[in-house]
Image 1 (cartoon, helix red, strand yellow):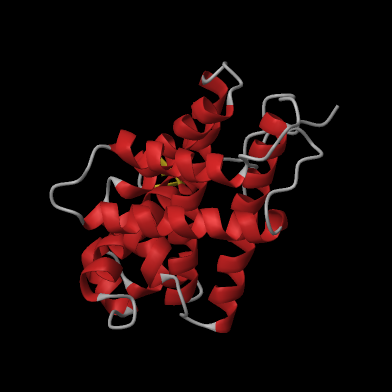
Image 2 (cartoon, helix red, strand yellow):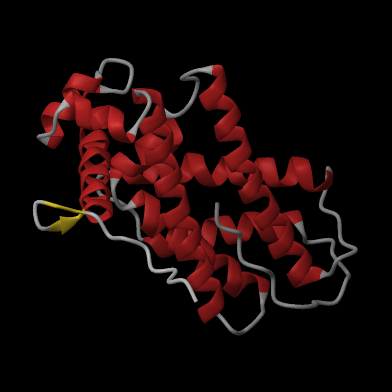
Length: 225
């Protein structure tokens, strides 16, 4: 029987895959600083390479362009936020809508809003960069729309439809949430995270106040990209 073990390549005493992962992480960390410090529009690949302490050749071994780096950074922040929300929903066992929403929003705020740079990337710098990036941003938002619908349906029943339907209701709720977190991330002093969670939970309750459908199963967590 033939062995299926893969040959692990080493460079400088470390596996090549590990070195590349470390290098990619350095570029991502540098991009977070450079894009939010200079702004994405006014920064360059050279700026990122300088901040990372790496060569331009190494940059292009990881990313095709500065735009690809921005997308990777944006996706990483979003993925971490979804993972945080998923974990929070798993820990919340009551099944009550208010408790679920507070848990999810608190996790989202703490994942993205605690660092103003992360909030700037996902709420400001990513917007309007190019048709390609805008299309990607809209695709990513659809994940949050799915999560909104799953949360509401799972809490008030699968037959409930909010005013305007889920497409409009989710757009309104997500738009309010992102604007609130963006403003909160740069506020000094910042209001308690619990205040944001209470506000957004109250807004959601207003959207479903006419629901007469009995609660059903606990909602599914947002899927990972």
